Length: 116
Image (tube, rainbow, N blue to C red; front, side, top):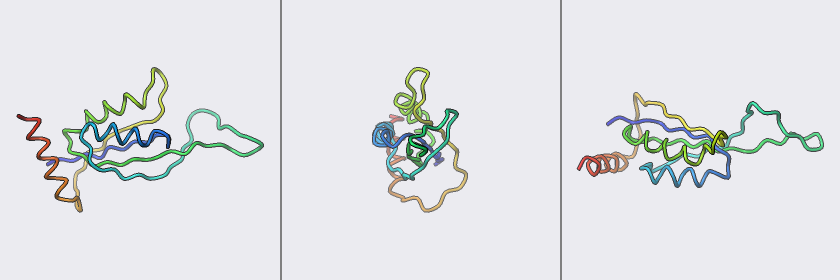
């Protein structure tokens, strides 16, 4: 079975929505890391203090067959017209160890259901 890492960087307030939408498309687990970033816009300051919104970095290992549906679902909440509130991308995984075999069984069951 082939796996892909789906990485999402989004504002903290979208964290729950990202997880909900990814699970709706077949993701079963997520690792969440705190983050902050600097974009193309000037940073906001208030009395000399720089304000930077906090972000969440969400990492998911999914079966490769789930990658496109998950990214499509995430696009619906991350992109509003011409404005982007976050980004999501996928990286193929060459080697993987330590994954819970129950997860593999769930991925395989999902594949069988889709193939029927």
